[in-house]
Image (cartoon, rainbow, N blue to C red; front, side):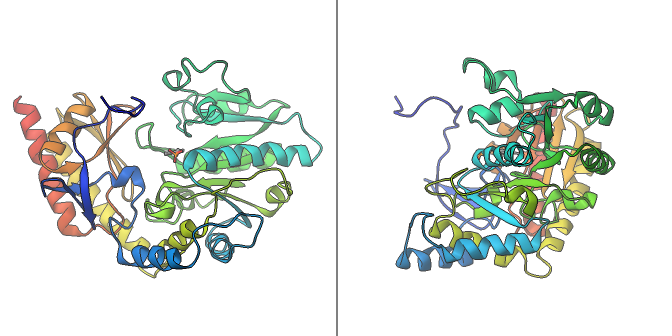
Length: 390
Ligand SMILES: *Cc1c(COP(=O)(O)O)cnc(C)c1O
């Protein structure tokens, strides 16, 4: 019997090492990793630049309290601000913590501006924001809330990407709107650009904060540094994590200056957040992602992948209903149960992740090359053929 809490339905697979887009199990069997630890290992496994940064920092200092200056943290914060809408950054260790910080920032902004009654956020059905008590309330999914007592108050959920529904949900207590530009766990569902633009306008009209959860869609995953850039608008607050440390736990909450100003000393904190090891890796990751051509490569590989998948979906239309997503954040909506396709792919050496709405997620590392996309799509083709004949 395992000593671990049985919170995960784990497969029997475990891996001994990884290299680039591949993982190797204990017996040396090779798997093409199109799950990337669920959009985490952005530069694949054992990327030399990340290894070097981690090893180098490990020789110097691992951890100091945020009561002292942390040069690598200042540097990563400054670079994230230069590359985005943001003026201020708070570092955390996970996605849920980054969203939790975003929720606190939204509430505190209105408090600091003399409107403490404005604490509620409008959220969306099918969203996923993490597994803390506040973030399960924000996600609003019954299966995540069940058995954990009264949900944290302060979230009003609307259905669909429907601007009138959002308008109808605004009250004097509304602080802002929280959403993923592309719902990851919810099934790679993209909010239309037009809807995001309308949200920005609506927020401006009502003095509301627009809060994006880019924990999954950020750090280059869609071919832009953050997915909302495609819609040519900016949020007031944004959470980032998953790919940000390339496998080292790093989360961040980014804000504009007016929002950031409200988070005065003592309002928030994290012992490990922005730790020197995490920041050294984050800086090395950003070095690579911000290199000229890198995001173009992601967009190009995403296009190739999507084209191939569209062909496969045509041919196996009794297995695949729809191809979704942007860049290397792609999904296949299935007709049979999505987990059947995930298993059939795993048996053939391709790792993918199930999502809501009966979707199989394909999240290759951003360094993926065309040959690996070829290998993956051949495998998907074969798995679809086998599901069809079974
Ligand atoms: C994964 C995810 C989270 C939660 O991140 P953790 O690191 O697991 O806490 C939050 N929001 C989105 C959009 C995610 O995809």
